[in-house]
Image (cartoon, rainbow, N blue to C red):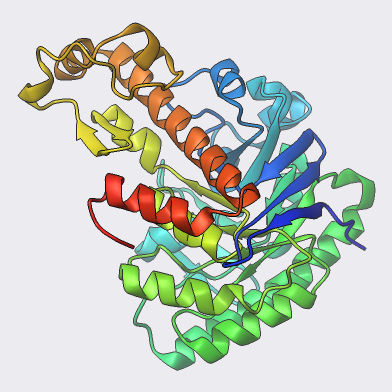
Length: 377
């Protein structure tokens, strides 16, 4: 039987926004929380120590990529991923389901599992629900995801229903494998809601996964190419059918508008590569919107990226210097920009939590959107 790991603390009176905490093997995490993505056991362009200094206690790594490289023999030899990459916080690993989904012509999904070709060397591999749980046990994931069937928007109903049927079957098999491993599986296995963009399937999946022996629930199959309106509609629809007793996680969202939308619907965890990917290309978050450092307007700008920001870029350097580094493709420019964006998102979530505590979440959202996006909510 999965242990309870989530405790709600504060609930917003106007929306479903809430503050709580997760008790995980490597320490308590206050929610809502944004997770930086460290696909290959490293968040690109930033030291692990700096992530800790910012305040992050939970980062994401990828089962598919780690399985292929460096491989389980290497990670096992180090006693798990925490020791291998010298990160003493918590790690969430996704199941590889989305990566397999992205492989398109290089994979074949059957009820037994997924056969796929490596994107690195073309070698053939098989993921079953059981194997994915076993891999994450070796990794030592604090939060592990079960294997699911992720589907693109606009597929036929019968295909979406079959994907949900297989996802449910794989969830049951994942729980059985977790229980078989017993003490060798030290993390927390989350179930994943699917159902594509069909509301009856979404409702059925959300209720079913909520009732299964998972300590947390992820909403899958969103942010896969659908419109923003579809995302908002199906996020709201799905979240209402997930139990409030368990933490809720939406995968692959990281822009301020999507973060607010998730928090407003009672989502506790979210992650995205957007912040780090933007940073490497000179796109930085500010309260007045995203600025592009490559633009000539910054060439003589003495001001910091964001007044009051505590990151290295804002406390030590000017926009002009960062503009120079990014234009010259200097590695340090990308590192400074990455630290800034992750600091900005961490602080944004802290500001959101403060607004929930003070009973002004909706007002804060309106004020933030008016300034960041230049429009009313």
